[in-house]
Length: 190
Image (tube, rainbow, N blue to C red; front, side, top):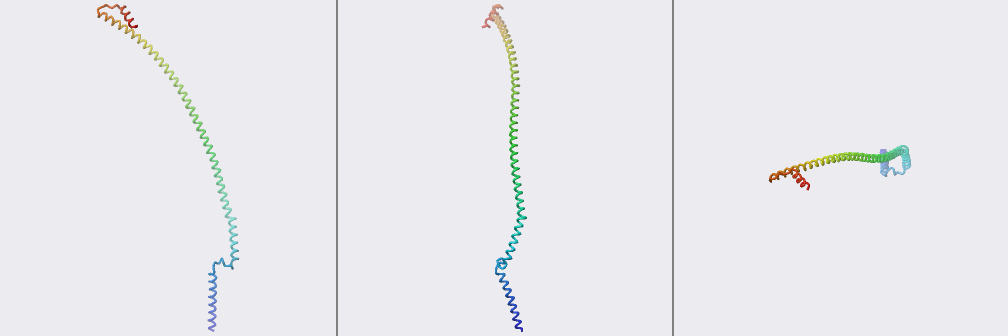
């Protein structure tokens, strides 16, 4: 019986070794995804997983992404409209600035023209006044010069008569006052 028992143990051991070898052979046969016996199960779970991913994407993720993209597009469109509005306002402001600048220049030219005309009027009045003063002084000077000339001629005539009388007396003669006056007068006249 010991042999039988030994034979049974050996058979049992051989069966265990064979089962273990078969298990190792199944493991080393390749990737479990390529095991044809599990294809049905794998296809089922693949479909379940794809349906879940599609549902999550279509119900949760894609609407959020679409909302963010729509919000961004709305913000961009609003910013572009605001930029165009600001551009128009800037052009209007520039036109108003140019008009105000042109008006200010025209006003400045008008003020300068008025000031120039006023200064010219004052200058003309001052020139006329100065011309009148110069003419009055020139007339006054001419009158004085005429008086001085007349006085000088009388003085020259008197000096000439006195000198002629002295010369005649020095030469030993007696000078007649009327004859001397006539001789000096004739000589002075030319």
